[in-house]
Length: 258
Ligand code: F6R
Image (cartoon, rainbow, N blue to C red; front, side):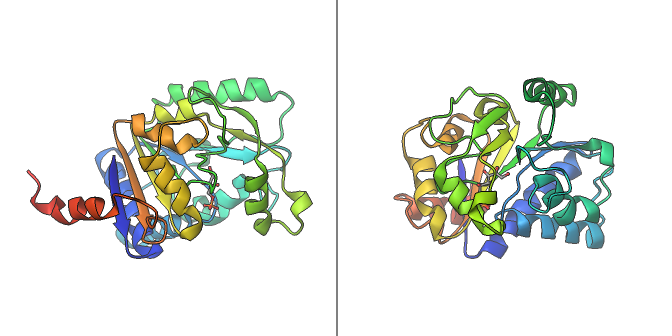
């Protein structure tokens, strides 16, 4: 695992954007896995800036989002469809037909989840997956006690996630209880993964994911088994890491590394 500790959330976002740009420059038709929530907002702003100012091209890019709330229509202001459109897709040149986000309203969720998995494979698999992390250590909506081999399916959100996400809704009762989410197994098949985290609220989850045991109780800990994963975190989110000085030492020595 590579652990990059940046002084600020802005630097965290810029580092992540550079990783995405590097992938797109090497493979213009890359498949990106994308997250929502407050963490990747700065990354998306930076990608939009790179598109406008540096000509970063998304015309051949395909995307798959991690998750969506069950029951929210695409145009609901708290749906992840709406979030992605407003914060990224409407500002870049990605063809509409290349965008995939789990469908929050469908007659047959099981069939949809199966189709989503097949579609990822048909598109050649995910080249770069962007992740956030929940305060309970979840990736996507793989809540504690999720199977580490899980695939795209419906999950019941944990109380902590519902409470954390209530800030986006006018009333806590409006937060959906169910979500469609890629599984841990789905995520682990991405070629490369970056996980972003900022703020003190994430410090315990980041430390458990990187330095704790691999466990379905902290689904981000499964990333310890991935061969190409980078944690990009700010100082606050890195605060509980026991080996923080070592990671910073590696980071400082990186330019001279053989
Ligand atoms: C969202 C997602 C979640 C979030 C996590 C952190 O697509 O998959 O795992 O990344 O809940 O959310 P924020 O960034 O709002 O703290």
